[in-house]
Image (cartoon, rainbow, N blue to C red):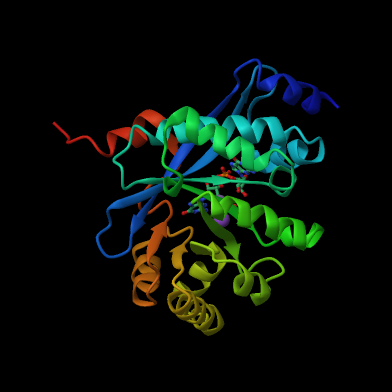
Length: 251
Ligand code: G
Ligand code: G
Ligand code: MN
Ligand code: NA
């Protein structure tokens, strides 16, 4: 297939870049981290949506070398930010279960000099579907290195509280569908966010409300006690230079 052929060459042709989306503290609105998001500008196909090429990269296992590149770039970029600001990197199942995954994290941290606690890995619940014991062991290794692990899109997959009992996640990311639902007056969404926040608080995990776009959504996730907020309301995914500018005083 043509897209696969192009994807195989994308790394060496330098066609990937990272965007960074700010995550802010719900109380102070200060930027506390950025989520790194991969972009592919293909010579043949132009800008290709990650929703299209990430599944292809996963199927072909190209996500392993690409993911290693993402980790290196993200850690390197994060060293330019204030020292309290973290970077979050999405990790696919294929990558997490690869035998060199922990080594590639260690390599990215040591090459960049970024302290482990400033790197947070984001995984979705789907990683537990293939081989739950392997996924758990891999995440324990990441946690032992001192990195955070966030549970992404929480509530949309096969949620099981067993994962949360066995692993100390740093952050639960509440999926945008619940945020939209709550702001739209859906009582179930509201109750679920409230329950997730209560659970996270009592287990000393942080919570991020995802996909906050409007004042109304902001007001409700704040009231429900989400600790951190991500979404277009505070900033879209942006190029590295623009992310860096958020820390420089405006003239
Ligand atoms: O970037 P966008 O904003 O369009 O993301 C679309 C999807 O692609 C999301 O589900 C996101 O998790 C995934 N994605 C984006 N960047 C990365 C990445 O660097 N690695 C992995 N594994 N998935 C990513
Ligand atoms: O699956 P994951 O949560 O990692 O992917 C994040 C995706 O959500 C990216 O595609 C990012 O561009 C998108 N995103 C981030 N903030 C918002 C938002 O406020 N609204 C919408 N519609 N999408 C968002
Ligand atoms: Mn994510
Ligand atoms: Na998400």
